[in-house]
Image (cartoon, rainbow, N blue to C red; front, top):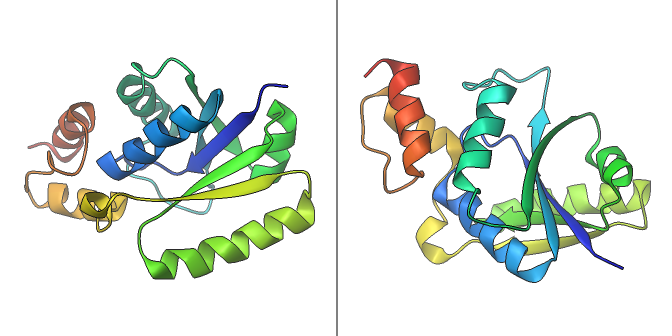
Length: 160
């Protein structure tokens, strides 16, 4: 049986930290879906379509990765696509407490799903999409934190 894993997030925008988790998860699991979440109560900088396009572009060289979007509960989407594993990246210790709570809830809702935590590499531990957006918004160079297609999209988005 092929094991399908999901790595879900808002990816607004995808960062080098996210991409590191994608690459590492793709080296562990035969198939990986990077699932861009649709959150109607959150205001994203990039539309779902833009985020899917950016994630698809930066993950293009990873053959066992596909990109999709989902709304609602991740466990429902996991069942819909036949995933067995949810991959979550951890940057700092406080992420673990939050992610563990979510993993417990997911296990309660869908006991057939496993959650795997991948700690980010040290050099990416402080990078977040909100940090990338904030620096870019003020004209800063985010090329150390985000892939080139994202940097171009941010420049276009902020008109710089």
